[in-house]
Length: 234
Ligand SMILES: *Cc1c(COP(=O)(O)O)cnc(C)c1O
Picture 1 (cartoon, rainbow, N blue to C red):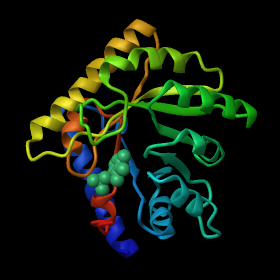
Picture 2: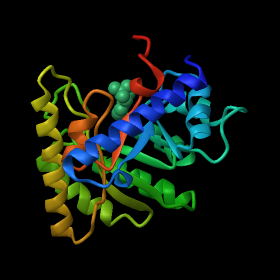
Picture 3: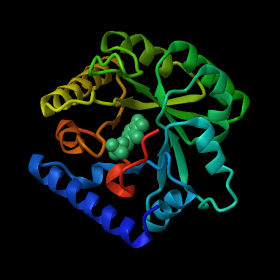
Picture 4: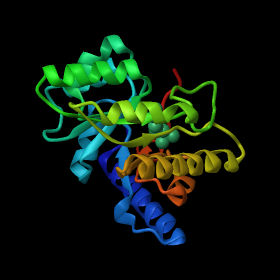
């Protein structure tokens, strides 16, 4: 695990990169938030993020995340977002521990999260994960199946549908990520107009492709490697 000093340097560099990317396309950098991704790193990763001033972190595995969220040394007041695939049978854990679920990709999961959030007496913010790059290795609903899910989500009393999320396919060709992000942006713009609701959050962009994501309108980049260094391969 890196030192806090190193983390702070990395975090400043990322914010600088966001500023530059925004300046290049005439966007307000305050409209792009950084979500530090703490997966595979110990609880200190979340403590660093909180100490630097980030309000939330992302985790992709539910059990690993719950262990951290229940850790005696967890930072107080930090929000946790689930960015990895959620199986329906873990939905209750997700509702109990996460401030938002970014990886909703089926009607069944929407309906289950809605029922469980109601039972827990809360409203749960969610994003719909879209496989906007048609990547067979990725979860997420295909672009042509997003509209009925958005309609279902907007009708769920105990969910707040904030917007859409995507993960670009891994590729040496930067156009692949760029096209994926612009496709999600266009899809969101069309749905927002049709449904009469902003669907304001576009969670897209990671360490390797965040500049393209910002150019396409990302409002949240999810950053692991650039903040914490390379993860050990599992
Ligand atoms: C791991 C992960 C990230 C962060 O990836 P980096 O390339 O390390 O920045 C972002 N989003 C999701 C969904 C992830 O699982």
